[in-house]
Image (cartoon, rainbow, N blue to C red; front, side, top):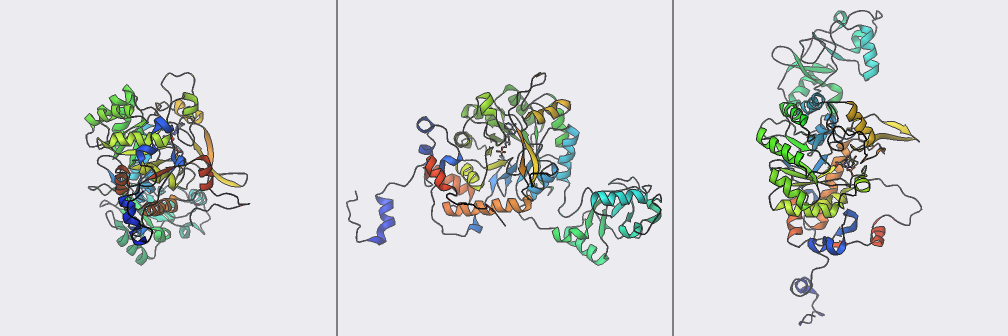
Length: 526
Ligand code: IMP
């Protein structure tokens, strides 16, 4: 009890609080005391609100991916073959995050995906469909039906990089009855072009003035480099948060490799394609194979950033920090497609894993990524509050326009496949492709595949160009409620005990969800 009687002095309420009362809730150490409480995950606790004295739009979400790479947003897409190929990696980087390209493919295919990200220029079509002068009118008409557009640049080689000799458009072939005629006989050769290096604004201006549908971009020798399209003019957004390298201004790109000897050859190709950060992909990161490959990477490519993992304990973390990693990936058994904990009996509840690994790694300045089990913005905030710098998403990004794979319909729903990299389906693809990287879930020579993941489907989520801004704004609002202006502030205030937490009983969790409605529709953003 306070020695002073405050009952007639309401204006002193906050003073009373700071002088005499205990802080509400728990500090993070008490919350995460797994000796008394057991392992926790995101749904098991809440962050207590702080004071709002700034607009949400002022909250900075800048965060470190590795020792040397800082992103404007903490979003990372997972190296899974139903999540990240070049299209996802391009859009993740444009929106301020980064994509990690999967390695369930040949080294050349993976390197080509990295190259596509690195050479991407916003608004420019870098991989247009190109034809040669000997293609026939019939072939062009068929391509029009296949691709849904009817303008194709014509180069001597029939490929991008060849000398531009014309453009064939619907107007050139519409009333041309002889489908055997060569494109060279009908194509438009009176071309307006722009030189490679032109920026989007000037390119768009030339395109508008030319009244043409397409503006080919050529190098000094007249070889086709890319294309600007009138129909895309409206879509050429600005991306102020884009993750780019300082020197080249190219988008940042990550890729995963395994820990086998042949992964060294793979990495050489990826680095040649311009890779910025490599993720050593292993479900149990504390192995002599990973330690050895991390040391080799740091010795061979000192400028390449290396993320090691996965880890869930301080002991695993110490091994990889000592090997030289620049970042860590945390999670074992928490992924939405994962059956590792069930089959291997190994793993850790994700909240406890993130807290312990981050707490330890922060002493050595190694940023950490929370990987697996993130289902919503709240989970991200909690992962970041427990010390993570970035959040890796698989299931959240699967089923978006930018994820690999075709949509299909089942029971009236538009779906895409989402599968674990340790599912039988993914591992069988690996084992039939001798050049794919195999080591995350099985070893060379394994006769029986033991699944650690499942294959399923997820609902069409639309484009990440809407979804990532939703996550971004949601995170900003959450930080505002907590009373912090940046993710650095968040981690610091958790560390010094200012930000408080509350453990959630099962009935508290029930109360925190929608309840007692006859029906409802959960729309997350417009
Ligand atoms: P999600 O975001 O909850 O869907 O989890 C994605 C994460 O699950 C990935 O980033 C991987 O760390 C992990 N993962 C991917 N495939 C498998 C698998 O087959 N078994 C276990 N974990 C997996």
